[in-house]
Length: 279
Image (cartoon, rainbow, N blue to C red; front, side, top):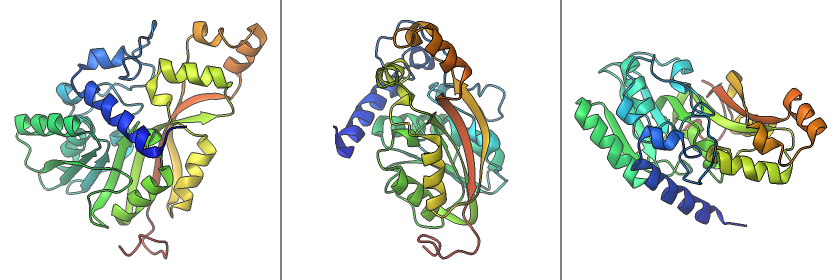
Protein backbone atom coordinates (compact mmCIF):
# COMPACT_ATOMS: atom_id res chain seq x y z
CA UNK A 1 0.00 0.00 0.00
CA UNK A 2 1.29 3.43 -0.92
CA UNK A 3 1.94 6.04 1.76
CA UNK A 4 0.14 9.41 1.71
CA UNK A 5 3.37 11.07 0.57
CA UNK A 6 3.75 8.60 -2.29
CA UNK A 7 0.17 9.27 -3.35
CA UNK A 8 0.77 13.01 -3.26
CA UNK A 9 3.87 12.64 -5.39
CA UNK A 10 1.90 10.62 -7.94
CA UNK A 11 -0.77 13.33 -8.07
CA UNK A 12 1.88 16.02 -8.50
CA UNK A 13 3.57 14.16 -11.34
CA UNK A 14 0.28 13.36 -13.05
CA UNK A 15 -1.08 16.90 -12.88
CA UNK A 16 2.23 18.42 -13.92
CA UNK A 17 1.80 16.46 -17.13
CA UNK A 18 -1.87 17.43 -17.40
CA UNK A 19 -0.93 21.11 -17.09
CA UNK A 20 0.93 20.82 -20.37
CA UNK A 21 -1.99 19.19 -22.23
CA UNK A 22 -5.01 20.73 -23.91
CA UNK A 23 -8.59 20.31 -22.73
CA UNK A 24 -9.27 17.94 -25.63
CA UNK A 25 -6.32 15.76 -24.67
CA UNK A 26 -7.41 15.66 -21.04
CA UNK A 27 -11.04 14.87 -21.80
CA UNK A 28 -10.01 11.90 -23.94
CA UNK A 29 -7.43 10.46 -21.59
CA UNK A 30 -9.12 9.21 -18.42
CA UNK A 31 -9.92 12.44 -16.63
CA UNK A 32 -6.50 13.72 -17.57
CA UNK A 33 -4.58 10.55 -16.78
CA UNK A 34 -2.83 9.21 -19.85
CA UNK A 35 -3.72 5.59 -19.26
CA UNK A 36 -4.51 4.47 -22.77
CA UNK A 37 -8.23 3.92 -22.44
CA UNK A 38 -9.98 2.74 -25.57
CA UNK A 39 -13.44 4.29 -25.40
CA UNK A 40 -13.92 7.55 -23.54
CA UNK A 41 -17.07 9.63 -23.17
CA UNK A 42 -15.78 13.19 -22.85
CA UNK A 43 -18.84 14.10 -20.75
CA UNK A 44 -18.28 11.22 -18.33
CA UNK A 45 -17.18 13.50 -15.51
CA UNK A 46 -16.98 17.12 -16.57
CA UNK A 47 -19.94 19.48 -16.81
CA UNK A 48 -20.09 22.23 -19.43
CA UNK A 49 -18.86 25.60 -18.19
CA UNK A 50 -19.51 27.30 -21.52
CA UNK A 51 -22.69 29.09 -20.46
CA UNK A 52 -21.24 30.52 -17.23
CA UNK A 53 -20.17 34.17 -17.12
CA UNK A 54 -16.43 34.54 -16.66
CA UNK A 55 -15.63 31.25 -18.38
CA UNK A 56 -12.15 31.22 -19.92
CA UNK A 57 -11.58 28.39 -22.38
CA UNK A 58 -7.80 28.47 -21.97
CA UNK A 59 -8.22 27.84 -18.24
CA UNK A 60 -10.57 24.87 -18.69
CA UNK A 61 -8.60 21.62 -18.75
CA UNK A 62 -11.74 19.46 -18.62
CA UNK A 63 -10.85 17.95 -15.24
CA UNK A 64 -13.93 18.76 -13.18
CA UNK A 65 -16.93 16.66 -12.21
CA UNK A 66 -19.44 19.43 -11.52
CA UNK A 67 -20.04 23.18 -11.53
CA UNK A 68 -19.49 24.21 -7.90
CA UNK A 69 -19.22 27.93 -8.66
CA UNK A 70 -22.72 27.82 -10.14
CA UNK A 71 -24.11 26.69 -6.76
CA UNK A 72 -21.74 28.51 -4.41
CA UNK A 73 -23.94 31.55 -3.62
CA UNK A 74 -21.01 33.89 -4.23
CA UNK A 75 -21.74 37.61 -3.76
CA UNK A 76 -20.05 40.79 -4.98
CA UNK A 77 -17.07 41.61 -2.76
CA UNK A 78 -16.63 38.06 -1.40
CA UNK A 79 -13.29 36.43 -0.76
CA UNK A 80 -13.39 33.08 -2.55
CA UNK A 81 -10.85 30.29 -2.17
CA UNK A 82 -10.63 27.53 -4.79
CA UNK A 83 -9.03 24.27 -3.65
CA UNK A 84 -7.15 22.56 -6.47
CA UNK A 85 -7.50 25.57 -8.75
CA UNK A 86 -5.71 24.08 -11.75
CA UNK A 87 -5.38 26.55 -14.61
CA UNK A 88 -7.82 28.94 -12.92
CA UNK A 89 -11.18 28.08 -14.46
CA UNK A 90 -13.35 28.25 -11.32
CA UNK A 91 -11.41 31.25 -10.03
CA UNK A 92 -12.22 33.26 -13.14
CA UNK A 93 -15.89 32.28 -13.00
CA UNK A 94 -15.96 33.30 -9.31
CA UNK A 95 -14.28 36.60 -10.16
CA UNK A 96 -17.07 37.43 -12.61
CA UNK A 97 -19.45 37.31 -9.63
CA UNK A 98 -17.37 39.01 -6.94
CA UNK A 99 -16.30 41.77 -9.29
CA UNK A 100 -13.23 43.93 -8.73
CA UNK A 101 -14.08 44.39 -5.03
CA UNK A 102 -13.75 40.67 -4.36
CA UNK A 103 -10.64 38.59 -3.77
CA UNK A 104 -10.04 35.23 -5.42
CA UNK A 105 -7.34 32.86 -4.15
CA UNK A 106 -6.56 29.61 -5.93
CA UNK A 107 -4.53 26.91 -4.20
CA UNK A 108 -2.95 24.07 -6.13
CA UNK A 109 -0.48 21.35 -5.19
CA UNK A 110 1.29 21.42 -8.55
CA UNK A 111 3.75 24.17 -9.41
CA UNK A 112 3.13 23.91 -13.16
CA UNK A 113 -0.61 24.38 -12.63
CA UNK A 114 0.06 27.49 -10.54
CA UNK A 115 2.36 28.85 -13.26
CA UNK A 116 -0.30 28.25 -15.91
CA UNK A 117 -3.03 29.87 -13.81
CA UNK A 118 -0.88 32.92 -13.08
CA UNK A 119 -0.16 33.31 -16.79
CA UNK A 120 -3.89 33.14 -17.56
CA UNK A 121 -4.67 35.76 -14.90
CA UNK A 122 -1.95 38.04 -16.26
CA UNK A 123 -3.34 37.72 -19.79
CA UNK A 124 -6.79 38.65 -18.49
CA UNK A 125 -5.39 41.58 -16.51
CA UNK A 126 -7.01 40.47 -13.25
CA UNK A 127 -5.43 42.16 -10.24
CA UNK A 128 -7.64 40.55 -7.59
CA UNK A 129 -7.02 36.91 -8.53
CA UNK A 130 -3.96 35.18 -7.10
CA UNK A 131 -2.65 31.63 -7.10
CA UNK A 132 -0.62 29.93 -4.39
CA UNK A 133 1.20 26.62 -4.44
CA UNK A 134 0.15 24.59 -1.43
CA UNK A 135 -1.35 21.48 0.09
CA UNK A 136 -5.07 21.56 0.95
CA UNK A 137 -4.23 19.52 4.06
CA UNK A 138 -2.14 22.49 5.22
CA UNK A 139 -3.38 25.57 3.38
CA UNK A 140 -1.18 28.65 3.00
CA UNK A 141 -3.95 30.84 4.39
CA UNK A 142 -4.78 32.48 7.69
CA UNK A 143 -7.84 31.30 9.57
CA UNK A 144 -11.08 33.10 8.79
CA UNK A 145 -9.94 34.26 5.35
CA UNK A 146 -12.73 33.07 3.05
CA UNK A 147 -16.40 33.88 2.68
CA UNK A 148 -16.73 30.97 0.24
CA UNK A 149 -14.64 27.90 -0.58
CA UNK A 150 -15.14 26.00 -3.84
CA UNK A 151 -13.47 22.89 -5.22
CA UNK A 152 -14.02 20.72 -8.28
CA UNK A 153 -13.10 17.03 -8.31
CA UNK A 154 -10.04 17.47 -6.07
CA UNK A 155 -10.73 16.33 -2.52
CA UNK A 156 -11.28 12.72 -3.58
CA UNK A 157 -7.58 12.72 -4.55
CA UNK A 158 -6.47 13.97 -1.12
CA UNK A 159 -5.20 11.16 1.16
CA UNK A 160 -6.41 12.75 4.43
CA UNK A 161 -9.90 14.04 3.71
CA UNK A 162 -10.59 14.68 7.40
CA UNK A 163 -7.66 17.09 7.53
CA UNK A 164 -8.67 18.73 4.25
CA UNK A 165 -12.16 19.51 5.56
CA UNK A 166 -10.73 20.60 8.91
CA UNK A 167 -8.55 23.06 7.01
CA UNK A 168 -11.55 24.18 4.96
CA UNK A 169 -13.39 24.86 8.22
CA UNK A 170 -10.40 26.80 9.59
CA UNK A 171 -9.95 29.13 6.60
CA UNK A 172 -13.66 29.98 6.35
CA UNK A 173 -15.06 32.96 8.20
CA UNK A 174 -17.81 32.32 10.73
CA UNK A 175 -21.01 32.08 8.71
CA UNK A 176 -19.02 31.25 5.57
CA UNK A 177 -19.79 28.25 3.41
CA UNK A 178 -18.42 25.92 0.77
CA UNK A 179 -19.69 24.28 -2.41
CA UNK A 180 -17.62 21.29 -3.47
CA UNK A 181 -18.05 18.90 -6.41
CA UNK A 182 -16.50 15.48 -5.91
CA UNK A 183 -16.67 11.79 -6.77
CA UNK A 184 -18.12 9.31 -4.26
CA UNK A 185 -19.16 5.68 -4.21
CA UNK A 186 -22.52 4.21 -3.22
CA UNK A 187 -22.44 0.56 -2.26
CA UNK A 188 -19.56 -1.85 -2.72
CA UNK A 189 -18.26 -2.24 -6.25
CA UNK A 190 -16.58 -5.55 -7.10
CA UNK A 191 -12.85 -5.06 -6.51
CA UNK A 192 -11.70 -5.66 -10.06
CA UNK A 193 -14.50 -3.49 -11.44
CA UNK A 194 -13.46 -0.60 -9.23
CA UNK A 195 -9.85 -0.94 -10.36
CA UNK A 196 -11.00 -0.89 -13.98
CA UNK A 197 -13.20 2.15 -13.30
CA UNK A 198 -10.21 3.96 -11.82
CA UNK A 199 -8.23 3.26 -14.98
CA UNK A 200 -11.12 4.36 -17.17
CA UNK A 201 -11.63 7.60 -15.25
CA UNK A 202 -8.76 8.67 -13.04
CA UNK A 203 -11.02 10.89 -10.93
CA UNK A 204 -12.52 7.76 -9.35
CA UNK A 205 -9.22 7.05 -7.66
CA UNK A 206 -9.42 7.91 -3.97
CA UNK A 207 -13.22 8.14 -3.92
CA UNK A 208 -14.88 6.95 -0.71
CA UNK A 209 -18.43 6.00 0.24
CA UNK A 210 -20.93 8.86 0.02
CA UNK A 211 -22.12 8.38 3.62
CA UNK A 212 -18.53 8.44 4.88
CA UNK A 213 -17.81 11.58 2.86
CA UNK A 214 -20.80 13.43 4.33
CA UNK A 215 -19.92 12.21 7.84
CA UNK A 216 -16.42 13.68 7.52
CA UNK A 217 -17.97 17.04 6.65
CA UNK A 218 -20.32 16.90 9.63
CA UNK A 219 -17.58 15.81 12.02
CA UNK A 220 -15.45 18.75 10.89
CA UNK A 221 -18.09 21.03 12.44
CA UNK A 222 -20.11 22.07 9.39
CA UNK A 223 -23.87 22.59 9.54
CA UNK A 224 -26.73 22.80 7.03
CA UNK A 225 -25.11 20.17 4.85
CA UNK A 226 -26.98 19.45 1.64
CA UNK A 227 -26.37 17.91 -1.74
CA UNK A 228 -26.98 20.55 -4.39
CA UNK A 229 -26.57 18.25 -7.37
CA UNK A 230 -26.01 14.54 -7.91
CA UNK A 231 -25.42 12.52 -11.07
CA UNK A 232 -24.51 8.94 -11.68
CA UNK A 233 -21.29 8.27 -13.59
CA UNK A 234 -22.18 5.71 -16.25
CA UNK A 235 -19.47 3.21 -17.09
CA UNK A 236 -19.53 1.60 -20.54
CA UNK A 237 -21.22 -1.78 -20.84
CA UNK A 238 -18.05 -3.28 -22.32
CA UNK A 239 -16.20 -2.58 -19.07
CA UNK A 240 -19.03 -3.75 -16.82
CA UNK A 241 -19.54 -6.97 -18.79
CA UNK A 242 -15.93 -7.98 -18.14
CA UNK A 243 -16.75 -8.42 -14.46
CA UNK A 244 -20.52 -8.96 -14.29
CA UNK A 245 -22.74 -11.59 -15.89
CA UNK A 246 -25.96 -10.50 -17.62
CA UNK A 247 -28.07 -10.72 -14.48
CA UNK A 248 -25.54 -8.89 -12.32
CA UNK A 249 -25.07 -6.29 -15.03
CA UNK A 250 -28.80 -5.59 -15.16
CA UNK A 251 -29.02 -5.40 -11.36
CA UNK A 252 -26.03 -3.04 -11.25
CA UNK A 253 -27.52 -0.70 -13.85
CA UNK A 254 -30.95 -0.70 -12.21
CA UNK A 255 -29.71 -0.56 -8.62
CA UNK A 256 -28.33 2.17 -6.42
CA UNK A 257 -24.74 0.92 -6.30
CA UNK A 258 -22.34 2.96 -8.39
CA UNK A 259 -20.06 5.94 -8.84
CA UNK A 260 -21.59 9.40 -8.40
CA UNK A 261 -20.63 13.02 -8.83
CA UNK A 262 -22.07 15.14 -6.03
CA UNK A 263 -21.95 18.86 -5.33
CA UNK A 264 -22.16 19.45 -1.57
CA UNK A 265 -22.93 22.67 0.30
CA UNK A 266 -22.21 23.27 3.99
CA UNK A 267 -21.81 26.21 6.37
CA UNK A 268 -19.43 27.11 9.17
CA UNK A 269 -21.70 28.15 12.07
CA UNK A 270 -21.69 31.76 13.24
CA UNK A 271 -21.60 30.58 16.85
CA UNK A 272 -19.70 27.40 17.60
CA UNK A 273 -17.11 25.86 19.87
CA UNK A 274 -15.54 23.47 17.39
CA UNK A 275 -11.79 23.62 16.67
CA UNK A 276 -11.10 26.26 14.04
CA UNK A 277 -14.02 28.51 14.94
CA UNK A 278 -11.88 31.11 16.62
CA UNK A 279 -8.77 30.73 14.46
